[in-house]
Image 1 (cartoon, helix red, strand yellow):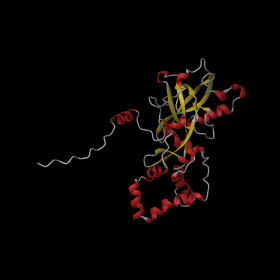
Image 2 (cartoon, one colour):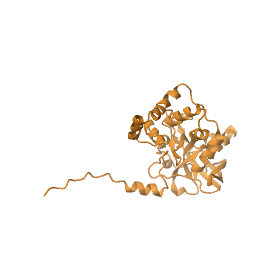
Image 3 (tube, one colour):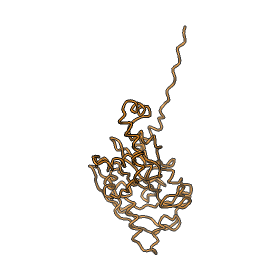
Length: 288
């Protein structure tokens, strides 16, 4: 009697990943949290008190040098595809080639390009913070991923317009820093409600923050998910490596367009996007 040929066993999906992803609502494509840590969100209008904790910078950026204690991590995202999925902009976040920025740069020089498409491909500014919510201290340290226009700009303005002896610039000092008192308002965009910070005040802490809460925090630099150039390009084009190869053989025009990205962007530097109002509107709905 002939033996049945044993079929190759297929790889099993990790059921825990599905369960944990479903319980958190979705799996983020731009950021990750340290093990056991959750995300902080604004859930209602009114007053909210939080403490922001420092972290050790690993990668020098325009706001802080490696080895310094800093309080936020700035990064940039693109929203692409039919569902507007978010992916980290390689150019503005880590100063490396970004296929989406290259394609947008090419479109900007095309007089017949769709202006709404060009606008939609502009990178959006976001920030990460480690925070403690005074309303839910039992949750411990949480990660706050939020649009710069919904919080960071108000924080910057409050510090910029303060007196030097107010000491606001050291608000995140865990020993002698200050608690933030945020005024939260509700707004809507594209039929969806969201919450934004409208006012920022500082209040001296009554006691230092427990060192156990912040001394071993991973650098926020490590919490950003940056895709490789080729992978991000395939996500943007909604193709696999095999499909890209087939397109190159079957469609000369498509192949030429992809190859032109880098050539077109070598001759001119990209223009800075200083249209803050547009970025603010586009970022609003991502922070429910």
